[in-house]
Amino acid sequence: MNFALIFAGGTGQRMSSRAKPKQFLELHGKPIIIYTLEHFEFHEAIDGIVIVCIESWIEELQGLLKRYDITKVVKIVPGGPTGHDSIYNGLEAMKTMAKDDDIVLIHDGVRPLINEDLITRNIDVVKEFGNAITVEPAKESVVRCDENGNIVEVPLRANMYTAKAPQSFKFNDILKIYEQAHEKGIRSIDSAHLCSTYRVPMHTVLSTRNNLKITEPADYYVYRALYEAIENQQIFGL
Image (cartoon, one colour):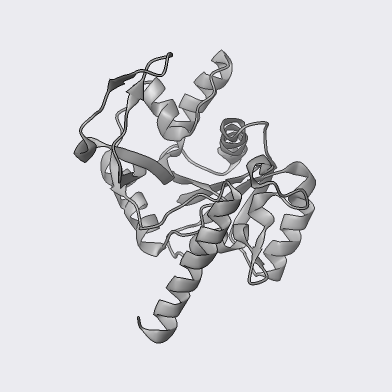
C-alpha cells in the first residue's frame, strides 16, 4: 500500500498571521491544506492519508475534510513542537496500519504546487531504489561558510540541488531511523537530512517546477500568482 504522511503541525510564526496557521490560510475560499491534500486524494495509487495537525485545529480540519469530500484520510495526529517531531508522531501512529514494505510519501501541508506525475515518480523510484528525495537543481551558486562567516567552499553548481518534497520511503526503513533519532534526542531539518545523518544512501527525483513551501508572507503571494497562472493555462490553453 502507499500512504501519504502530511505534516501540518506548524504555527506559521514567520507568516505574521495571528488569526490562522499558514496551512489554513485561504486562496479563493479554499485552505492551502486542502489544495495539498487533493493531489493525494485524487491519485489512484494513494491508499491512505495520515495528517499531523496542530492539536487545537484538528476539529477545524475534520470539518474541512467533510466539506471538501477528502475521503482517504485514515488518521489525524497531534503535531509536535518541531517538524521533525510531527513526522515522528505521524510515523508512530502509522504502526497500526502500515506494513514494513509499504511506501510512505512525507509531504509538507503547505507545499501545494505538486502534481500527479511527481507523486507517481516518487512511488516508482522507491520501488526501484528504496527511497526517493524530490530535488530541484540549484539556480544560484551555493557557498559553504565557517563559523566566522568566511567562505570555505563554492561547490560546482551543476552538482547542487535543493531538497523539496515529497520525500518517500519504505515505511519500516524511515520509521527505524526516526525512532533511533528519538532515542538519542536528535532532530533534523527534514527526512533527507536525517537520512544523511545516518549515512543512508538516497536517490533523487526531479521536482515539478515552482514546488515552493509557503513559509513567509511573500511565499503566499507568489503561490497565488503561480496558481492563477496555472489555472489560466488550463482555461485558455496558454
